[in-house]
Length: 458
Image (tube, rainbow, N blue to C red; front, side, top):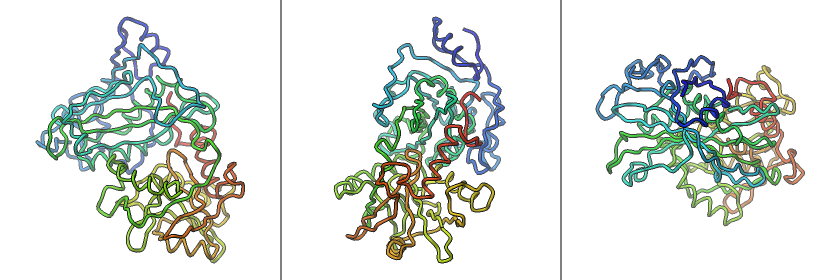
């Protein structure tokens, strides 16, 4: 079997798979692409200097990364792309029709697995056939919920090239979540390279119809066998992917929110600002209760002032007319209770460029003020009554934007303005949500050139 570069085209991988052995160990790659990583990345600052297995990486303070239990410096302190192995499936699955896609039910042929141990550090990364995980019944993830995940997508534009949208932000957030669970961190560029290779191998699974995409789910779990609360000495990082259809399969129908004053999603000093699995399970029952009352989503409130935080599993955007005639867009500020969403960050960046005049966007208000500040339900009630409330929407990876036309609050339905076509088209969205959907989709598919777009073949 010849030694291959990580940049080897898919046709070469297919040729290799036809030979007797399907397992391939890759030669050391030349990782020289610019990945546009944010300066706020929480990955080890000097991890890029790790050129071979056995060299310790440094953390953000310049100290060697050590095992949290023993203090011993890990030799393989970063994901090492030169150790990548690829095993192509011998039994490819039938790719489902786009019209029959159900979110999270049909997965691609391959997955990524990278083990970690507190003594030996990161193991060899592997792209392998999709298969069940082998876990000991005493694995820490099954008892104490040390697990985190990310969600991002690959899109195919008119040129047929699959692209990732801002994966650097997902890697930044994943490392932040990992540090919160005493999990190992890694260089985000390295995992991004593995994601691009996975998408290249399974590129036939990336749908091409408008509004469709390949959803990618990087996950880390504690796999240490044995009971006892503490930092897990064994971790598994794995990535799976599934094709998904348009979020708005029946049109852009606005949703109604139930503003719960009973249940709390997150609190100061907690983990609501991290993408941990444990943040989501407790929201199921409140969501069921809201659905029984005729609402599609929960609006999570906090404190005696009923402060707005998030919409279901999305961030929140609200716009008002100000006394001087300008429009203010408001989203709650980040902190312990608000997840730093990639879509939220994208919306804020686009709106601030419009506000400053750096990049004016057609369809947005001429005079726009962008704010990150606290909002309360009494603020929303007052604005609805005096006519200054313009629109409310949730924003996130799945829907990009989701318009809201009403909020159930203290036995009253608070009306929220939306488009006038009853959810039948793009015009159901408010003016800001409408432009944000257009601009973000354009960058995801490559129709609008942007440094946020990461073609998998580059």
